[in-house]
Image 1 (cartoon, rainbow, N blue to C red):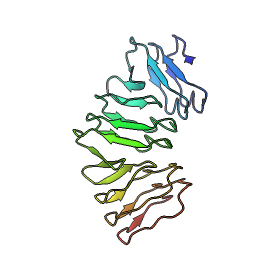
Image 2: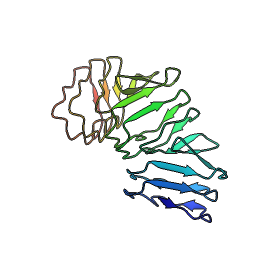
Image 3: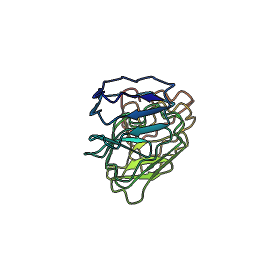
Length: 215
């Protein structure tokens, strides 16, 4: 556990980045700013606590959340995304290899690119049926309006309703061994299958007319 002193006001960019042995963090009331990727790649993290007197941040269900915006800025392998969270920020769960399941509540209206980057342990992905922006099918998160697949995992099967595979949707899913792309898909965006090192073959249907860089 890392106990941050009570007089600390700001936690700088990358301050605890790559602290793979860090299992718990306790953020005092004095902290009013947390920099980008402050806890990136802390893949052993399983407990996140924020002082109840902190005016800017709060902790709930092992998630670090901005009070005013209800943005989830950091999660860990034991997190449960609380109902009320509006946005899941970029790299909030970066390299959280111990995370096996995620449930997106109905309140979430935005999931940033790379929010679940390198979560190779994921086997189950669900979205609440009352979510107006996203839906889940076959262990995939799909944008309702565009039918774009924005997140998949090693147990995903791409539904025939999907028209595009979003940027970094399966990136660093190193346990993914097989994928079938349906004829409904017309585009595969940047980095969609980046570093999927266990994939041995992919058949791209004639419907695909666009493939992004590093796909």
